[in-house]
Image 1 (cartoon, rainbow, N blue to C red):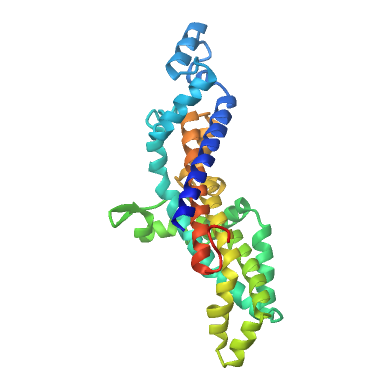
Image 2 (image 1 turned 180 degrees about the vertical axis):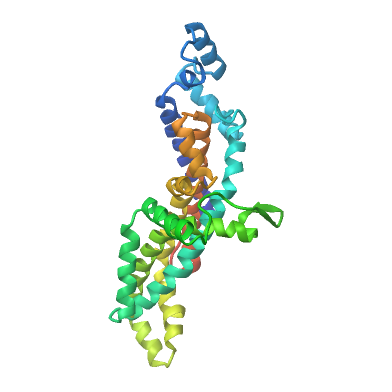
Length: 323
């Protein structure tokens, strides 16, 4: 297993090198940031001087070498908009996104898996049919529309939650987070529900399909013949064999949430990485864009690796070596 983990590590390194090439090429061909930094009345000499200061006058392969060397040290340059290290800006915004993603994933697991199991165990009951109908709505409704409706209903009409912002921060184990205060939770709950809605719907449908398949297997019939209770059959036997595809989707959802909370964060004015990335793209802030894309890609690759390892814990028959 150790040998396989080492192999996977080098595979991750190779993928990250390819990602750095793609990120560099994409940010290079977006546009020349010099024209955004200088006034429209800038002379050719001023433009050439700015390009030299930013290293944009060097050959393309030299620029990539400098970019890769600096990226390995965590140096992506100074943000054109914030006028400080791009990495420090991202690390400043990351806690807000991670706490939003954490609450979203907790809601997804605690709601989606149990509802999917019960819907799969009793597919003909009215409650199961209503659950599946709700999951169809959850998958179909766009998140930006759901977010605006929730703001209108719960914030403007009922006044239960704030319209936007992150709220008051507290401290948990020395980490500043909105999860430590009641006001922070009041600000957090609506964007978390908005993000979780479609994820919960997908997990319900996937878990239901897996549970229905497992309930037809001989080992389930054998367990029932031994007098094992329904709850134990569902959550002790059937669920364990249903979890492999569910864990795969949860891993993909986790990566998607970290990378693509842009719309939800913008709607709720949540000060996270998604809103920061959108602002950086609109202002062509290349250091921020590069750092954001590389960090998100690294998270995706690491999450996929963790999912592979979790397979062996869920089902010992699955080997990291593919045997």
